[in-house]
Image (cartoon, rainbow, N blue to C red; front, side, top):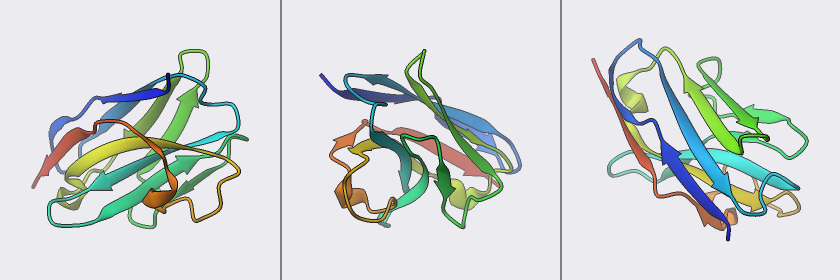
Length: 125
C-alpha cells in the first residue's frame, strides 16, 4: 500500500536550517514524481520542489537557491534540505507523489493523488 510519512518539522530561527524527510512505502520511485508542498495559514497549497523519476529537479522561485530536494532510493526516503530559512517559510509541509505520465504543472496540487499527513515548520524572526 502506498504511504508517505513526513518528519523533521519544528521551530527554528530565521537564517537557520532544517531538513524534512518523507518515508515512502509502496510502488513509488519507479515512474513517479515526488514533490514537496507547503500551506501557510489562510493560504492555498504551494508547490515547493519536485524531483522527477529521471532525477531532474525543479523549485518554486521563492525557495530556489535555499532548498534542495533529493531522494535515496535504497532508503526509500525523500528529503528537503532547507537553508537560510525566513519567517515566510512558516507552513505545514507535505510530501506528495504522482505518476510521471500525469499531465499538469508539477506545482499543481490537484494532480497529486498521494499525500502525507504533513509536518509543521515555524520560523521565527
